[in-house]
Length: 112
Image (cartoon, rainbow, N blue to C red; front, side):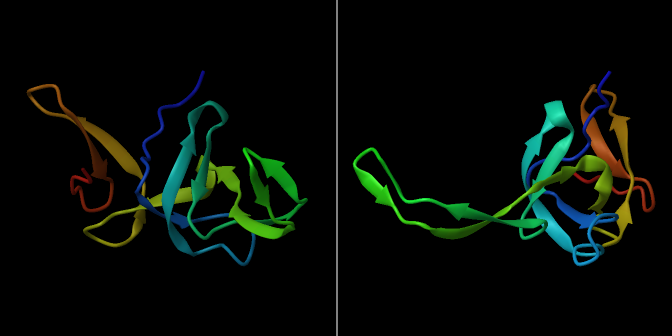
């Protein structure tokens, strides 16, 4: 059974656990992979790949070392509240109309 993902693309998150050089850094979510419970954060968990030269659709891709963001587990990050600017847990709250919104557990501010 999968848990509900309370993060969205474009949210600012802080790295809570992980490599020493990334711990405590903040970044924006650029991709979410819900089936694997993983996310990609901009500028965090950078990886290097040695790329061979190849041709695709009439264009030649040059050889070299490319850098890209690697995936990380969702449990390694916490959402940063836009109001109190602190990493926080996220709660779900329903209106009378049935609309669902995310809520900061520390300052009780609506996130969306």
